Image (cartoon, rainbow, N blue to C red; front, side):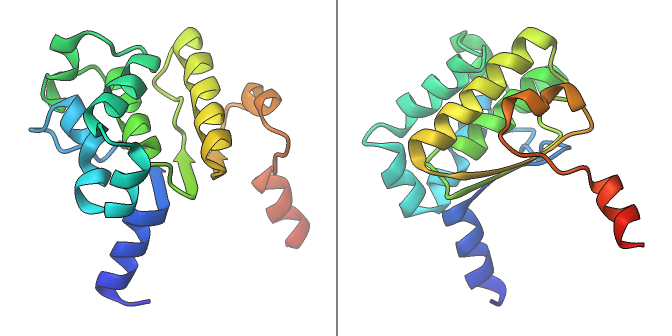
Length: 157
């Protein structure tokens, strides 16, 4: 898979929550959330007839319901708020696979639990596979399978 084909596959099929968020700082929380729908007809269609309403719902379920807040540029949000925007962006449009790299590291316990519940609910509803990477072993209880990469690495050595 080369260049444009790889990019098309990624935007159509993958929802990625990057550890460093990768938000566009000048775009609002809502605009950042809508980016996959802007570049993928498949994700736009899956998000439903009103993509803005879908994005607003995802943001609200992640604790970002204030209209002033979701219209702020990403660089004016707290780290935890940026992390939740990155999660909403990854989930919109029902991607086939959600890759989440330390997606709860900047969240307090209450926001973390709400986030994980939403992530699991959205993945289940869309039939998406979830690859969740975390150093926080207390999160294992939310998942039906976990792999300790340190043990795996020492086993292969």
